[in-house]
Image (spheres, helix red, strand yellow):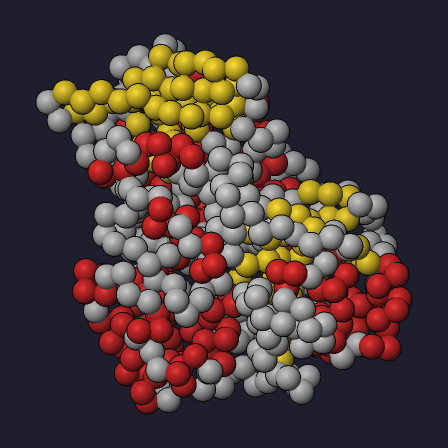
Length: 529
């Protein structure tokens, strides 16, 4: 157990949600002095992949929006129920999210759209007897038997043509070649979504984008408690010692604004190290430029983990996750619209007011394009006459139906043209083009955490024998939980802090819908009825 005294320091490598959550748990639950917590971040802003930026003139952008969910996100809600909003210190972020979703509940009426522009009855999942048998088999197999096999090794061709798979894969961004273990975990973690997958009524949204609604309030709370944010700092290496099976982090090697530096860790000091990055080497495109697909690990987002993995076999294998860009990349885009015409036409077509419709997926589009229209304003300070839309494509190398170009080779304006074609909105295309700015984002590693893996490819949050260091982020192993969620990063942070400080506090258990007879019955009835 670590005594969080006035002399004990904590160093958090990376400024993503995992580090921010760990810092909050250190203060709130471990009574750790905020001024002794150092968050070391290379970029000028904290928040990691939970970003949101831009303006009405140059255009807004978010790389993605993480799905939040009521039942499964127990650790995230535990964190946010004690963080005040920016607007009202008497209202927590958790309370604001609850109130917003009560006012604007999600009930998608146009979840799937076919090639003839028809809204499909998505409640008809399309699963046949063989699909159900294959699904049951995957759920029954232990992970040790599934191993590193692909999803498409467990299902027949019919399954991949069903409405169910079109909705599930685009909600969670699965590709057919991704890890079957990860798909099984998602099925078990979100089986409560089976009866409502066609409406996504289980989705919980933040009032603004997740950077403005979650990250900024959390940063302010940490700053008010004295936490030191050190930007322009890259941690390049960590030295460890091992004696009688006990391992300690002893030294951090830094690059601070281009100058080498070391930090010596006392025996009671703590190090929390975020590994890898799903948004490493993200590149941006504009109306007239194509977002580059960066292949040469240019921003160093993987370098620290690659360095550490050579020090101990249980520090994981980053090459499993960053070694196949073709299987991990996809592209997103954000529209900044200075006319309401496109927004109104989507509302009329879908039957959903902005902010109530969740994903609209063009099931037969060559890019497998999906879009979502958030409730305005989606960015802090967004003018009343400016609107936004976010979308993404899973198949970035296939020629578009209306442009004939691959998404990966398209400018923002060409992606807008493909979207207008999918919506059959030629009559307003000229006005939309004249009043819309498109920002595109290519992300070479965005689904890298779904890569096929072995049991030892992800390290434990607390490696065996560790006394003062923990590993955080989307590439650590948390049994039964699912990556590509904010919950995963926050749960790992809570686990790390409680274990290293020896806190006698319960961690909210991983939610098991099948343990609730009513929920289990409804889910199984939907899938197997």
